[in-house]
Length: 284
Image (cartoon, rainbow, N blue to C red; front, side, top):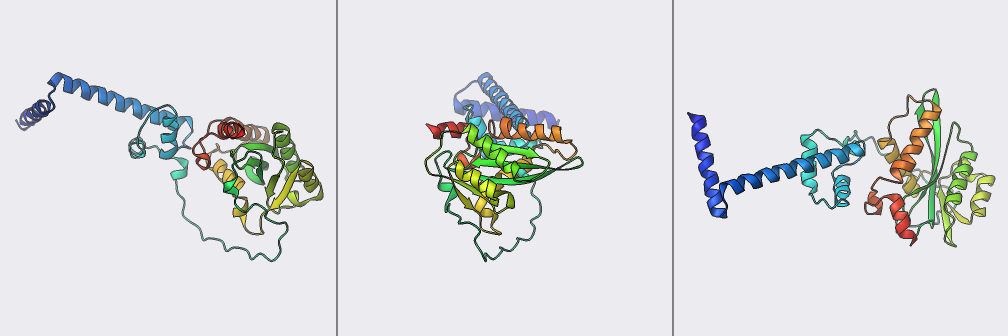
C-alpha cells in the first residue's frame, strides 16, 4: 500500500513539473533517458581515458584530455565519476611525509649556476637539463642518463646502461645533439656536480657542442628541477621493472620515454600540452 502511494506521489510530482515546463510526460521521459545515456557515455570516456594512461591521469589531466576531444566536463564531475568507479590516480596515492632534509651549507661553488630562472625559458634547445637516475632490476640496477629540453619538456636524449661511468652521459649527449641540430647561438647545459658531468672529457664534449656549462649548487637538487621532476614522474608512472632482466627493462624504459612521455602524456608545466607537440609549436 505504501509503495503504491509512493508511485502515485512521484507520478503527480512529475505531472506538475511537466505542466510548469510546458512539456508532455513523454518528452520529459525521453529527455531524461537521453540525459542518462549521455551520462553513461561520459562515464565510459572517463574510464577509458584513465585506463589508456594506466592510472597516471587524475581529474585535471583527464579534463584536459577530454577538452582536446571537444568534450566539456567539470573537474568535480570527473572526480565524482572516478570515485564511484574506484579509480585512484597514481599521483593521488599519497605517502606519509618524511622529515625535510636540511639544506647543505654551500662552502664552495664547483661551477656557477648561470641559469637564474629555469621556468622563464621559452625557446627550445636554449636550456637542457641532465642527470642520472637508477632503477632496480633483476640481479642489480640499471642506470639511465636523461637530457630534457626545459622549454618543451621533451626528453631529447637518453642512455641506458648497467653502469654509471661517464660514457653514459656522452651517449645521451650525442643522441640529443644528433636529433636536435637547430639550436640557438647561446645555449646552456645544466647538470648536477656528479663526477660523470665534471670530468674533463664530458666538459670538452659539452663545450664542443656549443653549450655554456651550468651546475647545481652542492646539496641543492632544486637547481636541476626539470630533470629531477621527470625522474619522479617516471618512477611513479612507469610499470615496475624490478623483476625484469636488463633487455626487457631497457625496452620498458624506452617505451615510457619515447612512446608515452614524449608522445602522449599531457604535461602541466607546458599548459597541458604533449612535449613533442610543444616542441614543434615552440620551434615555429
